[in-house]
Amino acid sequence: MSVRRLAEEQFQPANFSFNEENAVWAEATIRKYPEGRQQSAVIPLLMRAQEQDGWVTRSAIEHIAAKLDMAYIRVLEVATFYTQFQLKPIGTRAHIQVCGTTPCMLRGSEDLIKVCQKKIHHDPLHLNATGTLSWEEVECQGACVNAPMVIIFKDAYEDLTPERLEEIIDTFEAGKGAEVKTGPQIDRHESAPIGAPITLVDDIKPVRTNLEPQPQAVTEGASVPPANAGRPKDTAPETDKSLKTPVTAPKAAAENVKVAEKGEGSPTTTETAPAATGSTAEGAPAELGVPSGETKPKRSRKPKPEGESS
Image (cartoon, rainbow, N blue to C red; front, side, top):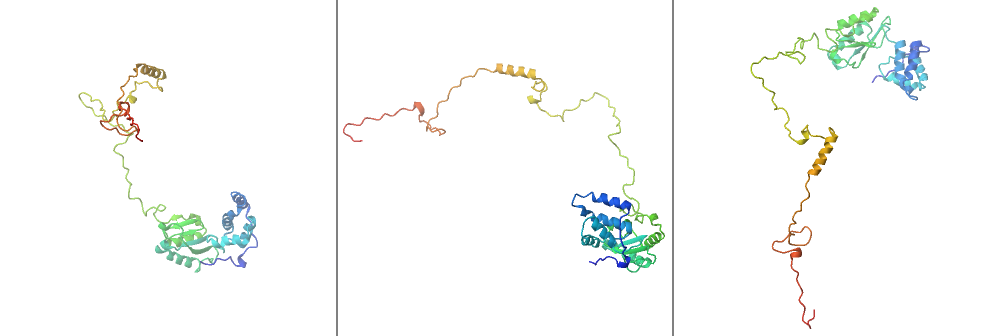
């Protein structure tokens, strides 16, 4: 990783302060964070300072550190860590960031770098003779399908050729950068395939839709009633609509209950089956041919003759 340091002393301004509009914006941004978490606004404030002066100066870092009640070294760590913060003066009309990651490299980003070296300066992060242009190589910018690409300030220019990049640089140098079309520089809509659509281009009208009335076929002879094949065949009493329920007809349902209670016959006596023979234990199986219960004869003990000991 390259070491990022602040610009030399001869480039550093004596002091920094937000202009009136940015000062109001900064206070509103700080209020978005909970009490005690205002230091989370350090990145937005650094970016707004860069947009105001074109790059992040030492005095801007000191001003933001005091505003957020942070140590100077903490704000310096943030500014030197993120490559989105420019620590040296850059071109006032265009700072070109050329993507050099693999997809763009395979599609010709090295030729774009050569254009920047020829038109601006041989070394990155160096100003041209008039101080209006600068360039650098950066990592992926997120439009790999439209490689190669560059970003100038906040706008992306994709599908570039060396010739097209030279035209863009000349336009920015002339102060007419706002006239340059952003996005793809070829016949492409955003990230869609190159060229016009070639599929699903015909206006196909459906043969039939539910919104269009369909002609009714005229048939002669007797009409055929609809079939009941698709209807459920359920003859359960619960499905009989003529029955009265407590929900649909409370009074009629109460009368039905009284009639049902009167129609019940008196309980009939049933003959008790003879008890099964066998063990008297509950649940024990009965033995065939062996009397049990009261029908079983009692055995009497014969008296012993006198003189016999028990």
